[in-house]
Structures are given as structure tokens and as C-alpha cells.
Length: 573
Image: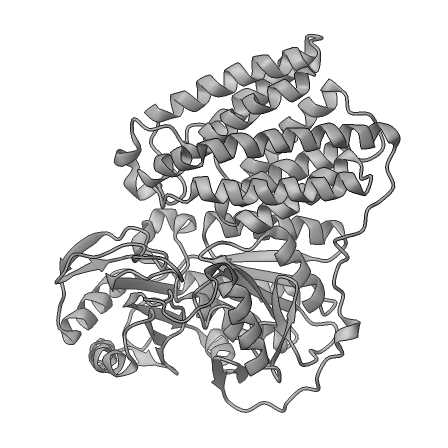
């Protein structure tokens, strides 16, 4: 279990502070994460990685010369917010664009995607490569649904080495995607990890059993079996990975690959070496040439008892980039001449506190929106346990507490905005950033997207009309579907949001005032949220447990229906 902490709420902040103090010659802290403390070559691509904390050395430990230029650090096992991603990218930018790379999890996809759009609007080219190495999380016909585990390192290293070599953003993306498609991983777990302050682990594996294919957050594996010997585990992992040779590799005989044997937190190095001994024998006997393997903790999960094996199939270019020198706190190879330190005063760190001017009509609308957020907080406070219970049936049970964290932060940000005479658009933007930042995870990303969509539509100049609100909700729906890739019928919040948006738009177009139109839309939303109980989830962490979800409505859809209904009395005033 996690034994050494002070206040669990401050665990990530204090760990980050200590990490930076220990490695000041390589990294420095910026809002949202860390960047290199050494100068990078001007006019080169910046590689920014990230995700939830609790996976050290991923992600902050992989920042340094020859590796990432910055790492965004979310809360424990929670995706960082779009604002955090944006802040780190602005500070790390070298003038030739930014590549964002992270494990393929819904919250990360949403938050990094939002940050990318914002950077592009500001004229900073930005592309994304989401790592998809875990073979147990989806079949070969659905590679885009696979999650990223220890194969993160191969993609990050290739991208960073290419950037260091002066590749253009287009070329960095090309080799990163090639590395992504040539990386395959599979993990096992013997027991779960314990969050700081928690009384028990996030999950348990039955005594004497091993979960095969388990994810780094405790996502379900493909089976359970008896704990094997070290040799038998090596044989199991190798046999699974050798069943899936990436396109373009050809035969195994004479092929080259790097091998990563990763400990997830509690498995000791000596144990890993015993396993790797047999892994090396098996791969060599198969005719594979092993290039610069890695054995150790590469992507962990706090104190999880488990391990994963990664095969990274190389071509000549990927081999050269894999072998390139690097000097990061937790990953070093080859020899590099130390770069000079940066001047922190030169960093481009956005001023998040600025309040732009607004019209009196927009300031008045902002006060009403603040009341709407207060009503939202009240209903979520009342329903937090129920939302958690719904989520626990086929998910990880954190939807209620995540929503509560987000709306509390959003209300406080809105209160601050009102006290400083912010317009409607600015209030919503501040609330969106606070909700996304504090809630983390998928729900935080989605509500950040929705509030940002309303922010852009309402702005700070005009008095919002019913048409403005209908347009903003439609944009929110479209943006959520674009960023999250969810469709109607996938059993997500979209199944309630789309009917709400359509009903609101139809009523406004028919000439209804906002209160009447909103009431009709609420009825459509509530009915649609209830109807999600008959759907099977096709996205997110509930997807592997689809059958368990039948008969239970989607918690995201339910929370949306509760919120829009709670706002109705504010609109009626």
C-alpha cells in the first residue's frame, strides 16, 4: 500500500515539488506539469507527453534532453485538464509546433484534443499521437480502441529523438505513428494498488490467481489463471505477443525488436530479471535480434503488483532513433553534451487571471449563469452517492465524486468572475477550465468542452438570446461528439445531450421563450437518460463489462438530466 504521505489531497503537488527539487538540473515546474530546465534548439518541434500521476517514471521522469520537452501531470490516475496541457505546451514550444502524445484513454483524448484546438487557433501547429499498444484491450480490427501502457515509452522516445534530430512536425508525426503501430504490449497483475489515504486497494485479484491483460488503472483483463512460475509467465506473454506481428515486419526470422519488461510497482528488479532471462531465450530461439532492451519500472501504477512485456518491432530509421542518446531523470542512454539552462523569465506562461472588458448586458447574464452553476452544485451534492453507485456497476465508481469536484471548482471560479465584472463568455470559460482541471477524467473533459462551447457562443458583448443558448448547446453537442468520438447509441452522455439539444433548438425555432423551450428540452433529456438503461456501452471503461451495465442508465446521461432540470427554476425567474 501507499504508506508515505501527508494530506492525500496534496500528494501529487508535494510529489511534484520533491521531484523537481531532486532533478532541477533537468526539469523545472510550470503550471500543469514540468518542462526541460535546459535550452532546446530554437525552431525544433516540442514533444509534450502526459496523463494522470501515479505512473512514475511516466510522465515527468521522461522529460529531458533527447526525450520529452514537457510533461503534463494530472491528478492520480486522472487525465490533466486542457488548461494544464495548454500551459505546458506554451512553455515548451520551440517555434516549430508541438506533438502531443499520451496513452489512449477517453479523458486524455478529450483534454489533449481541446488544448490542441486552442494552440492551433493561436497559430501554433499541433498534432496528436495517442499510444495504442495494449493487445488485450481490443482486437486487431479495432486498434484505435486500444489503450496505452508501457509502450508509451517507445513512442515518446522515437518522437523526441526525431525532434532532436531536426525533423519537421509532419515527419515527427510520421515516425511516431510508425512506432505506435509497431509496438505491442501485454500486462498481468497479482494485486491492485492503493491510493494515498485509501483503506484498501482499488481492486483485488483472488489469492493464488493472476489477472491476464489487466490495464494500469485496474481495467478488466481477459482472464484469470493460477499464478505461474517466472518461466511460464515469460512463455505466456511472449506467445501472446508473437501471435500479432505488425504489418510491414514480415517474418520473425532476422527481424529486429527492442524488448521492454516493465514492473508495475511492487515487482522487484530481481524478479523481472528472472522473467527476462526466459523472454530473451524464447525470442532469440525464434530468430529475433534484440536491440537495446529495457528491464525495470517504465510505466507503473503506484504499488500495483504486476508486470508487462512490450515488443517494439524496428526498421532502420526506428532503430537509429531508439538508440539515440537521452538524459532524463528516469531514462538515460548514450552520451550528450549538457545544454545550457533556460531563463525562467523567458517562458511563455499564459495569464489565466485576466478579465477582458464586457458589456453591461453580458455582465448581467453572467450573474444568471453563476446562479445556474450554484443550482448545479446543489443537485450534484445531493446526488453524488447515487451517481457513484450507478458508475460502480460497470465502471470505477468515481463519476459522482468527479462531478462534485468539478462543479465545486466551477462555482468558485464563476463567483470570482462575477466579483470582477466578467461577461458571460469569460465566466463560462473560467468555469470550464476550473471544472476540467479539478474533476479530471472523462467527465471533467466533457463538461469542460460543453462550457467552453457555450462560452464561445455567448461571448462578452451581446445580451444572450434564446437562439444563442440553443446554438451554444448545439455546439456543445457537436464538440463533445467530435472530441470524444461518441455516437448516439454508445451509452454515453451524448444519448441524453443530443435529444436535449434538438428539442431546445426546435422549440426556440418555433418561437418559444427560453423558459418554455428549456422545459421541453428537459423532458426530452430525462426520457433519453432513462432509456440508456437498455443500451450496451460501446466506449470507455464500462465497455468490457457491457452486460453488467444492462438495466442501469448511463451515469453521465443521468447527471446531465439532473443538471438541466435543476437549472430550470433559475431560467424561470
